[in-house]
Image (cartoon, rainbow, N blue to C red; front, side, top):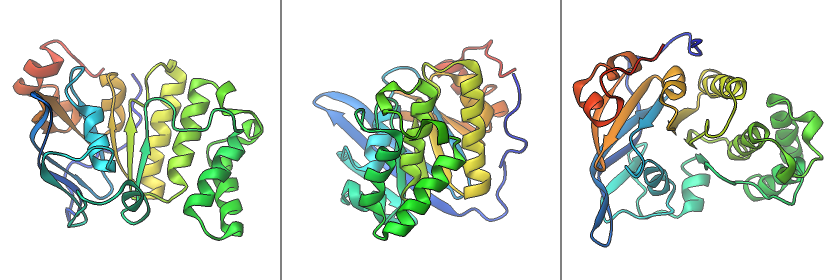
Amino acid sequence: MSVIKKFRIKNFKKKTELLRLEKVSLHFGKRKILENLSFNLNKGEILGLLGPNGVGKSTIFNVIIGLLKPNYGSIFIEGTDVVNDTIFNRTKKYKIGYVPQHGGYFHDLTLRENLKAISEIVIKNKKLRDEKINLLISKFELEALQNIKAEFLSGGQKKRLVISLALMSDPKILLLDEPFAALDIMTIKNLQQIIVDLQMHNNISIILCDHQARDLLTCVDLAIVLSNGKVVAKDTPNNLIRNIDAQNAYFGDSFKIN
């Protein structure tokens, strides 16, 4: 497996916390989804979430963006508890971008029309809207696709479109839910490079979850293994796969990155 990241942020000279979930619990009736969950994301960091099906990875994203409100706990962005803030406020004021696993675009609009629709919500100045649309189309090499309806794009093209839509509001934090699902090997490699470039060149802090553990561990600085709604281990990829708690909860004893 090729190495996407040429470096990993193992130790920050000055740790600057951007996002923190503190003792977050979420229950659906008697079913516990998240239980006293705590972890943080530092500025300039790519963090991966791993765990078996149903462990709550997508639920964590829904809690962060405000689609779900936890029964208990706090969500801090740059020191402010946003647990009672609206989805719009978290997007606009606190600069959270979200790329869902499925959808996230208008099926019957062209690629450019999708970008235009979102730009009208988040950018007041029309000239700046057009500049941002053209910049994103160029950045993700979408020129030849801009007049094609989104429903006719390939899986990888749709993913680039939805990431572009999320970047329209210049997020500080980007959440990627299962970005590698149902993509071919070359498309995954290209998407890994896009993720790392967003960190390096756009200074965006990123959280992603995926069932493709090797693909995720290739492009993150740190990763978390979740079990029973809690964090059981957090470390760099090479250290994490050797962690006994992470092995017992998720990897097994024979998993290797390479």
